[in-house]
Every structure is written in structure tokens, then in C-alpha cells.
Amino acid sequence: MTEPDPRSTPPTVIGAVAAGTVVVPFLIVYSFLFIAHGAFVGVDQPDITDSRSGELLAGLIALGYLIFVLWGMGRLLNGWDRWVFAAGQALTFGVALDFLLDSASGEPQVPAVVLGASLLALVLTCLPPSWQWVRTRGGEIVAPAAPAIAGGEPALDDAALDGRVGPGLGGPGLTGSG
Image: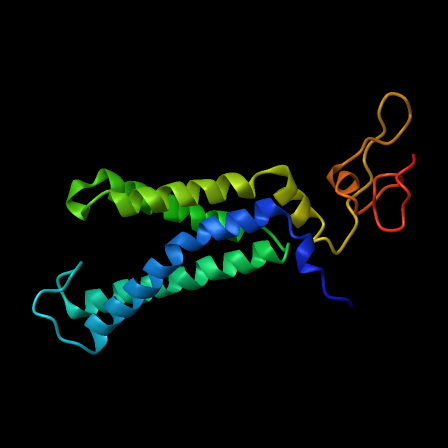
């Protein structure tokens, strides 16, 4: 079995994962911070809960969510599926929206950026090249045959248009003549 060519990953998939990484540094910092507050460092006033065990639980939830988000990114980049990634970004969108609308959670700039990035990641994940990437398992299989159009010729699909399949479309070893 050969390794897929990483240069064949569609820009929409790369863009979706890049936008989805906006939340990762926050999850790393907060999981470490809350686990430390709950398990190792005694604090006079816990940050988000009323107890050390609550801080520890919040840190473990943030760590679990971080792992979930990274797992989703890997699945999308490898072309296995997009639903874990989309679920992680939808959850990020919801939490960022809650923080943006709650004036007690602090300044709105960071939640606004995270909200925009998660929305962009969701939109890019739903675009046709991303669907095609997952449908072909990251380019490992050829897309199913396109249905014929009225003239009896097969309709062109995304894989044919980007040069992976189809005569006369500029693929490897092809002349470009129909």
C-alpha cells in the first residue's frame, strides 16, 4: 500500500483544519491551568468553580475536548470522515457564542475570533472539494462513476476536473486533447 500524496489534499480541507486550530492553544493552556489548580497548586479562590475538585474536573474536560478536536483534525486530513471534526467545531462555535453573549465572561474579542474561525472551519468542511476528499478516502480510491448526461457522455465530476481522472483533462501522461 502506498502513502497518499500530501500535496493532493484540497485547499478547503487544509483551510478548515487551519481555522479549526484556533481553539487548540486555549484548550492546552486551560486544561493545564485547571488540572494544576485542581490537583497540584492550592489557590485561594478557584477560577471557574467553587472547589479544587471542580477545577480538576474542568481541566480534564478541557483536555478531553482537546484530544477530541485533534482527533477530528486528523480524521479530516486523512480523508476518513469529517463528522468528528465538524462536531468539535460546532461545539467550539456554541461555546464561543455563549462567551460572546455573556458579558460576565470578559472581553468579547477572543470569543469573536474563535467564533469566526469555527464558523469558517464548518463552512470549508461542507464545500464540495472537502466532501470529495472524504468520499475518496483522502484520494486513495477513484470517485464513483459520474452519471451520464442527456447526450450519453459521462458528466464530469470534481475528480475529473482536478486532473486525477479522465482523458484530456491534463492528468499525468495526458496530452490535453479530448
